[in-house]
Length: 102
Image 1 (cartoon, rainbow, N blue to C red):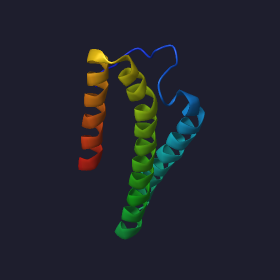
Image 2 (image 1 turned 45 degrees about the vertical axis):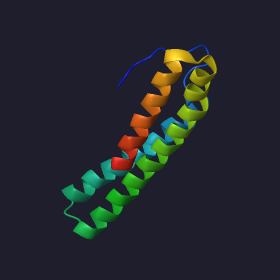
Image 3 (image 1 turned 90 degrees about the vertical axis):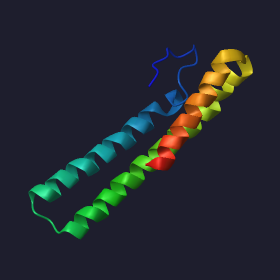
Image 4 (image 1 turned 45 degrees about the horizontal axis):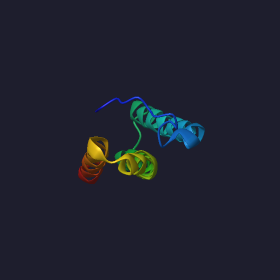
């Protein structure tokens, strides 16, 4: 995906960066737990239950990040107008489409 330099205000998630990193570390722990469950020959349904929890946690994180992107990056670009606004709306639409497919 595009890697654009943030404006002087940073990216939309900047205000919540620490809490986002904390959430991602918890999700990482869930995935490591899945690895341990497989390594320990745990019951399939128990593993699937944990996969569902990790998937839900990632989906929740992605929706929050998308909300922050829309509220900050897209709104700022829309205020400026022009090609940047069109690009930000297109990026957001594509991100939403990826989330819906996942």
